[in-house]
Image (tube, rainbow, N blue to C red; front, side, top):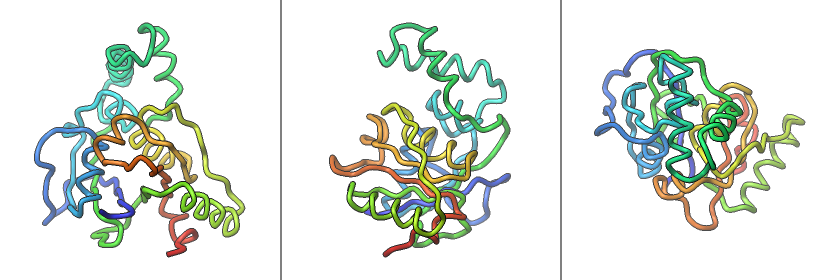
Length: 199
């Protein structure tokens, strides 16, 4: 399986690329790209309430936040709706608007990647993060809760901050990508990816 997936965020569906086979989770689309597919998804193709909120796929931000909170309660990740809503409000979230996400193996990029998501063993993650510091003087952000790892931690957050992100993954990403037991996630915005290309 591919060691890295590129994600591009564009305004309209690309020509000559495969539309996703049906609505699914953002992390599942990353998983398809890890298997070698190049696909695109419109906002309405992403059906996970948490991803819809953080990726700005819903035009009604408050309703999207409430739907994400409700899903955390249903999953027993929050004791009640108020606690879940507080948790959700701590996510960085893209402004709501129609957008298209293109997912592809990074080594065969059909267009420039906005984010590169890497699936790494902890030692490899450490080496890339040290390369990041050496090249730029910047640290990666580690703001995670073991939930919404790919959509919030490794897509929305680095898109908004312009900084690299580290995440241990979450049950959804571990199942959908899938991640091996000894793999973690590191995401690099496009401006940083070349700085940490250590082979």
